[in-house]
Amino acid sequence: MKAEVITIGDEVLRGEIVDSNKALISERVLGLDIECHFQTSVRDDRADMAFAFEQAAERADVVLVSGGLGPTRDDITTEVMAETFGRELVLDEASLEEIRGFFSRLGREMADVNRKQAYFPTSAEVLPNPVGTAPGFMLEHEGTLFFCMPGVPRELKLMLDEEVLPRIGQHAAGDGRGAVFVRARLLKTFGIGESSLEAELADLARDPDGKNDVEIGFRTTFPDNYLRVVARGESAAAADDRIDKTVCAIHERLGDLLYGEGDETMAIVVGRELERAGATVATAESCTGGGIAERMTSVPGSSGWFLGGVVAYANEAKQALLGVPEAMLEEHGAVSEPVARAMAEGVRERFGSTYGVATTGISGPGGGTEDKPVGLVYVALARDAGTGIQTHVDHFTFPLDRLRHRALTAQVGLDWVRRDLQGHELVGPSLLRRQGGGNAPGGSR
Image 1: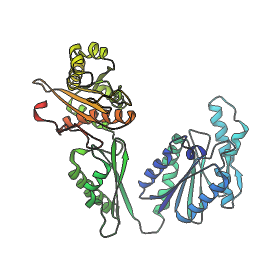
Image 2: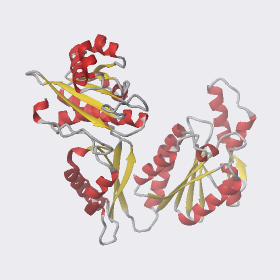
Image 3: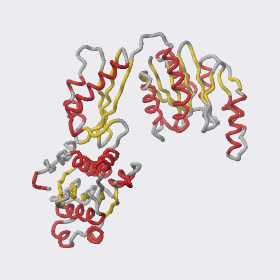
Image 4: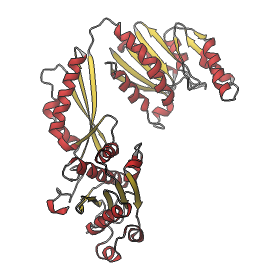
């Protein structure tokens, strides 16, 4: 079966919002072994919408539509769907009462404009919306199933999971065509560029027999690079076996460059490893401005392993809060190996943590010199090894804009904690590195 996703709204085409609905819907239907072959975004325009619906009916088995079910004049999905496929609009009294009840529970009276949300094309099956005023509906046209859902992500997700996917699953089970089972996994890497990644996995991604049993897609989500592995099989067991073997081969090939799967972020992986080791961490940040701490504290349960952080931007703050000697700052400058080392060791000592992570650099666009160019950054990791404090410091020059420079530096700091906990060498990313950043020498700890 082929699926198509259509998202509707001027705000989507203008770039005013990020269209997350496409990704959510495509991911969910893939769990039913149904691949999304087409994705379309359409303005709130009758002609454009009608054309998109007609085109989808010709090339897809299941069409999932989001948006345009609201009460305002530009919400015309239901009307256009009815017109396109020659249906009348009829009032569903049960839906009208549900909408009235929704407003009543909020202590408000339903406005007359909301009445239009209770009209549906003839023969459509209404899909209830327990958290909003816009019910959805299912409509079949010449063998193609259309599911129209609200554009609000929270409402769409609930309706998709509770109403839409079960109906698609039932339809697919009784479809009668030879089933093709599909499995997909998202693998996340850090420290290698997209082109280098593809070259490293070229033989695994190649399909010499043309069967397309396994595909590997590449996607950059700075500062990481993602791999989407898709496997197909004549049975669920065959698809599972193919994807397991491919993912295992990728793990063996990439080693410590591959840090997580699925929804795992670097911070989630770091937190899990810290919890497993019974270890804690604290941060001392200058150029990253608290970015590492923010990523860590975004993880539920981080209070169990993240003790605190210091954003020491000014030299006076580095002295007062982290114990960096004034003479060291005057001699070497804030962006230097001795200062990064002192920051990491200072924050670890003050918080009593297992690890102390520090960053200090020049994110630009100004502030660089011939000796210390824009993009230069020092990262330090201090660790209580039980027998003493071991500290590793390295420097990199990342030729990036300010926002990406800070993001990449923060990810390096997190990655070093992960690497140390997993027993890997502390190295920097090979992507976008102009100078510095050699492998960690054995005596630097």
